[in-house]
Image 1: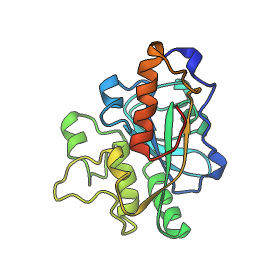
Image 2 (image 1 turned 180 degrees about the vertical axis):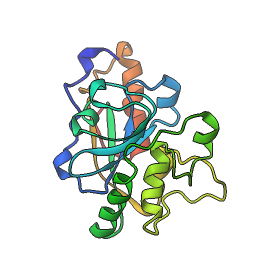
Image 3 (image 1 turned 90 degrees about the horizontal axis):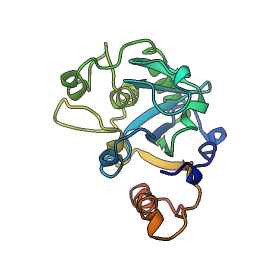
Length: 204
């Protein structure tokens, strides 16, 4: 993506978020086939101080503010560097969402799932996490299952978007409006895909 099509930061209104909201992210460093299939490849839990997540490796801007291979609390500026973000709110009381935040905060410092097998089968693990398993467990502990499954398999961030317990409360992008024309066909298709899978009315 040409730098001329990117704004300085994501235009999501972080001030409108509440503790316990979930941020679905399309990472700047995702491979093209991830962005055009899963698209939403990362999720974090909003707190008053930042966003709790589990990351395998620092990515995007502000790498120095992220902690590799662990559950961390990243500053909002780290998330503002992402290209696309959907803010999701779980349909429950603020007290329940706060309890989910407390659960996630208690996991800060624990390791990211160390290998592929543990990533694939880490849904209920409590000694290592992926971003999806952390968000799922935080609410599962409060009696809300955001990603039911008969199998003990990973929780893909994109799956959370289909939960009946979830509503979209905001979205943001770093992209400037993309000019129509064959030179910008790639970005145009990506913006149209964003609209399709997010349900937003963002203008391409």
